[in-house]
Length: 246
Image (cartoon, helix red, strand yellow):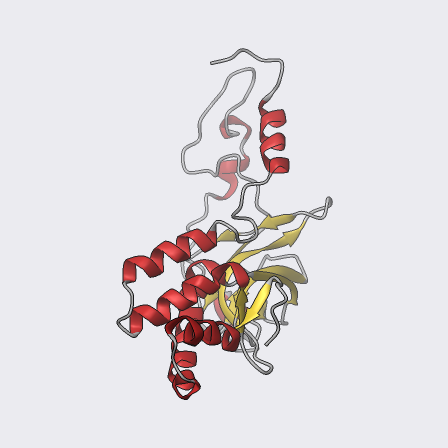
């Protein structure tokens, strides 16, 4: 068994660590590997699974199919001119009706009611916040958040849906994906002690509190969770400016 230390460690190797520590035989490997897989799932959804970002083209009916390895989404948006991720507004009122139909747009454009503000929001007398040297507040009109469209997610039919006026041909999609297995599943090395603690807990050789303590300790070493000197220096420099202190 290799003792090289890498960012990831196979679950089989972690199970071997457990068997060695508890002085158990290899005959107990299979049930312990199942427990290790359950630990992978338990920690995955809470702290361990890493998101990835892909570009998804829109279908002709203004929907986008969720990827096959999709588990949960974290961001939906478009790319700005600086290469940044500009998120879309999540509109839960956007109907999921006929979102798998090629004629979706034709079906939802059969307008039943008109609940828009309409020309009122374009009238000079009601321009939000400023008119003729005086500030006005037009209640019900959106504030200062700039978002380049909206969407909704249909988890049942596994599609992202967009309104008829959506003008982009593709969207950026950041999501949690299911781990892929080759010879074995892998987990971040900083969480291997948490996996061992989970197996001990389920085998009544440890406690739930010990497991969660090890998850908390391992989480502090995950990417984007740990504190680095570069991050500290950046925060200090960004807050330093020619301004009055509060």
